[in-house]
Length: 329
Image (cartoon, rainbow, N blue to C red; front, side):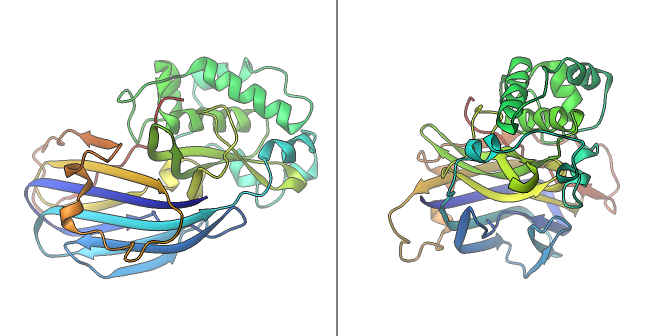
């Protein structure tokens, strides 16, 4: 499937701010499941971009804006061909779950057994893990039981959690978005000795066009296999992968600092289109086509302004994060 992804984030401030340092993770990688045919990042105000790889191998675009401004716009456009060759369930059915086997303790997987900032142990999480069903049999059987357990404890509901909500809090609420479903699934996997990691990306489904989060489980000789606990399924050619990490805190689409006394408001818009061929001028996304002014955009997330808190002008403030969410699972 050939997909075009347009992702725009707008930060508005009540007073001029300056000395911004931003990291952006919005570039789809090329791997065995997908091919990045083009990626373009634009910022307003315009700033030079430095590209590097983080500790998980994800591409990061880093830019600084030193001059004062009251509005910052980040626009990322991508063309991706998704070509997952084999259904994940078929790969998992061939592997027996044996957490004590050396295949499940390789150097590339052992890190993903440990707690992480947003998937840390709590009494509520320990109780959830202790109540998980018997985890024996094929990897496909184990993963199906874990997804069912997650969906039995969480109901999909927007605006009850934030980008920085830890899994223990989402579990207490019993509600959340795909980010929270993924975190609880990671906790379940790690709780039974199954390495699992977080995937940040996009999804293209009827009525559901948005940022999305899902997971990968380590299946020994079968390698990393993708699982979508929010939808109780396995990603196909409608999922576009952006970055991987221990949890959301490793792979936010954007994060940064700014200097000033202003209140901040964030608006996020995402559009994912299935296209037949690469259009001419595909990366020409003008200001007149800003997604928040168009009824064709299917996601518009706005968060309220942050309180000032009386910080001195010399203090740096952390920029708001984008919560990953999609339509109801």
